[in-house]
Amino acid sequence: MTKLVTADLALRGAVTDTVIELFKDAPFAWDGANCINLARAQGIAMGHDLPKVPSFNDAKGARTALKRMKVGSVAELLDLWFERRPAPAFAQIGELLVLPGETELGRRDD
Image 1 (cartoon, rainbow, N blue to C red):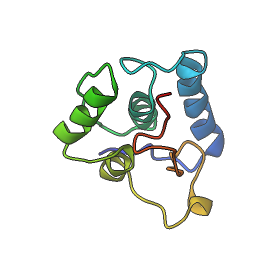
Image 2 (cartoon, rainbow, N blue to C red; image 1 turned 90 degrees about the horizontal axis):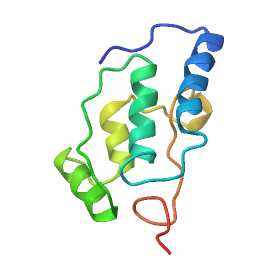
Image 3 (spheres, rainbow, N blue to C red; image 1 turned 90 degrees about the vertical axis):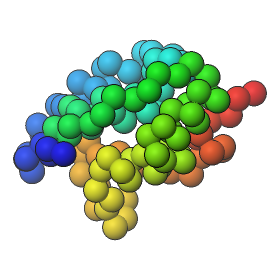
Image 4 (cartoon, rainbow, N blue to C red; image 1 turned 45 degrees about the horizontal axis):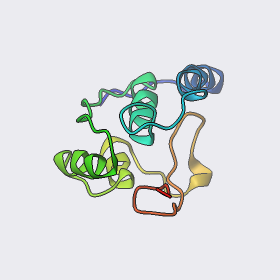
């Protein structure tokens, strides 16, 4: 994986803003704007060489896609793709954090 080689927080912020613009007005969609695709887009924008994500269009498909990538959750996928920081306080602008969710996929389906 190639990382964005910069400590320039303004540049990291600009890259992150670009990704946010792509997703901010898009409603959640299993086959489009979702956390897996957002994480991949941000990783690529930050200079990581990440594999394609298998397509899916519902919760069951998302679980299957994660299994095909040899992980059991989005948190495990992020651990596979990115270096883990010792605590959220060490994160720099543009890095992704995992926070507790309401379900194993991090959203409610009701």
